[in-house]
Picture 1 (cartoon, chains in turn green, yellow):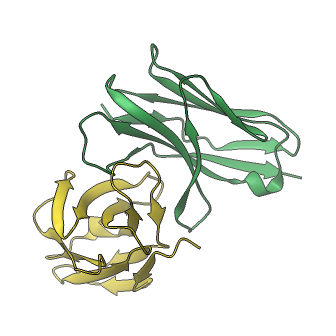
Picture 2: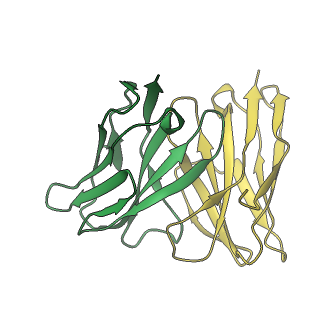
Picture 3: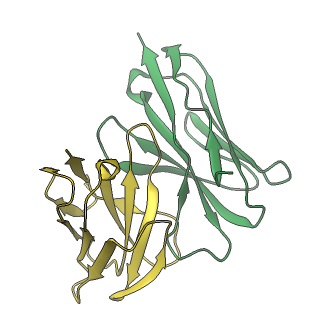
Length: 112
Length: 112
């Protein structure tokens, strides 16, 4: 079983739509969680960290459910520039420093 | 830009050949991680170097090897190339024990 599972999509939504991505992780000892964004043929970049209490950054809201080992990302009022692949990332307890487990990514296309 | 630079950006090799990929980390970062990203997949951890020592390895065979230099730049070497080694190779630098990795733009390797 993979450490991190994501629905690869693709998700195709109109501008202004609200879209949600989900991710599950297998190691209950996982300690840190992130969403990275990767534009086509570019490198991944940190979008936001995910905290137990949930956190929001503008139009983006991240949630963590430790009991269900589930992470989500909600994007409100989608913009064309949000089109990208969103990678769910987990750091597990005891893993090598800097060893991040990436999901395969969820592809989002926002159309006009 | 992240300040992490990789070279070469693109290269083509044939099966059985050897390749060396290079990475200069962001100033002040003493930890370098290497990831392999196949098409349509998330990045997979190859190994990490911290202060010139290998500090963890993913599920890759010994023909994948690396080095880190005193200035914290790093090399990834792959011997006896196979077709499945075709991928984007990403270098990421960071400070120890933090979740934000700063990725270079990657080296895209094609093995024919």
